[in-house]
Image 1 (spheres, rainbow, N blue to C red):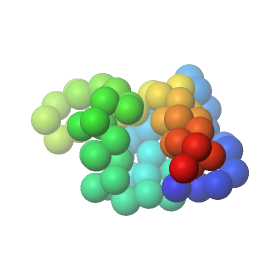
Image 2 (image 1 turned 90 degrees about the vertical axis):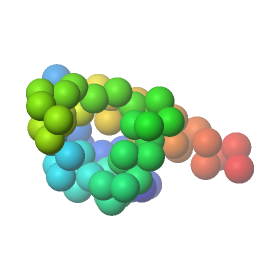
Image 3 (image 1 turned 135 degrees about the vertical axis):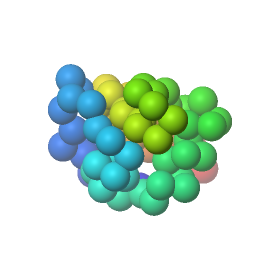
Length: 70
């Protein structure tokens, strides 16, 4: 995951590819975070998923806190 705070608009919705690009993670990692409850998404259809920018920033912050404690 990106070390510096990503330039994410908290009011924008990001599709999976955009979210992965901004956080510098792969889709499997994003899915892992979603499945573990660290981030919530918006399902438009089963194949169309969006992540609120505010959720992406919260995820980034929580991952950074975990890294500091490890």
